[in-house]
Length: 204
Ligand code: CO
Figure 1 (cartoon, rainbow, N blue to C red):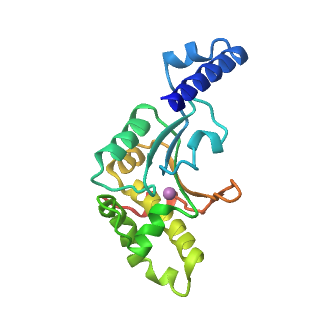
Figure 2: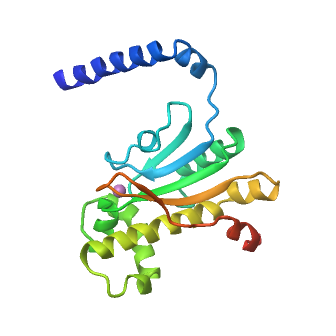
Figure 3: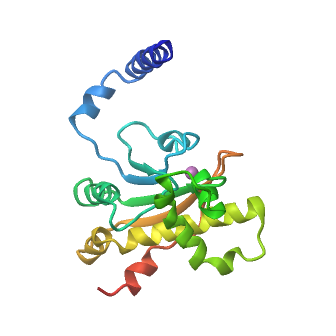
């Protein structure tokens, strides 16, 4: 229990510091949220979404799951996306993976971990379909390449959802990005995914 007391103490200090800096911060924020961004990232504790992009509470809507996977039957992820796009009207959806992702590594090594194997099956599918891009790569280089390929594939899935397709069809401006985070240096990289390509080419 003592460990949790520490967390609650930290929270009191954090809330006090925030209030000291901006006395109306929580009052304003409790009235409404108007985030510009939706973040779809990995659950990994080393990739805290708001912190690594320097955003405060209220500035980014967040969905995280193991290996930042976007599956068309995942009502959780789709509901977050739909609310973010249709109600909050975010201008950007950022799918962010990270190098050294344990989920990606497990998928690649086909490690047996239990129920989660079914979830990581989606990442194995990426490894299979993108096999050519992994050829000749071993060890860390192979894992990190699959981390990149997985982010791009999941960003593509975002573009293919009815939520994004419908938004584009009615002229709403929303861009989808594929980023990757380096655990070793704390730096984000843009993988150059251009969602406007999917906007032009996709025909429903
Ligand atoms: Co991860």
